[in-house]
Amino acid sequence: MDPKDLLLQLDRLPWEPFGGKTREIYRKPLSKQSFPSNFKASLTLAKPGGEFPEHADPYTHIFYIIEGEGEAWIEGERIIWRKGAALTVPAGKKHGYRNLEKTDLVLITLNIYEQAGGKWAF
Image 1: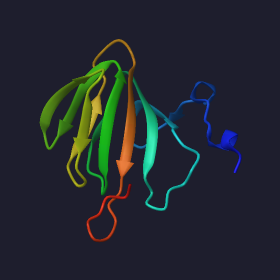
Image 2: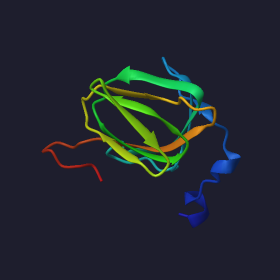
Image 3: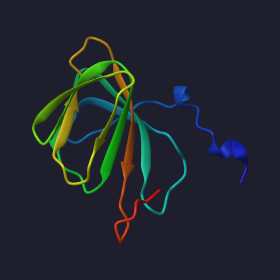
Image 4: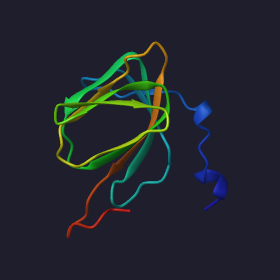
């Protein structure tokens, strides 16, 4: 495999709407590679007023804020997050977030699936 095939120029990729019930949430993949465990890493953008409504997923999230400020909820508890913060949301926990600011909220989103036997997928 050519190492150049492993490089993504994110500044050249368009933001893809996340879809579903989200409002003003966009993403870019951080890897071209498919992982057997379905591990996913994305650069996520929440425009001002953008919201990812409360929901639960069968995998763990780790969110790392690169730019901006907003609020998240885990099981109804409100958490303010800003640049430099990392938040882990365990699988099955109800969660969501929104950008309350007038500037973009940019974060890295990691989706980590558990394998049989309770071992982490990475």
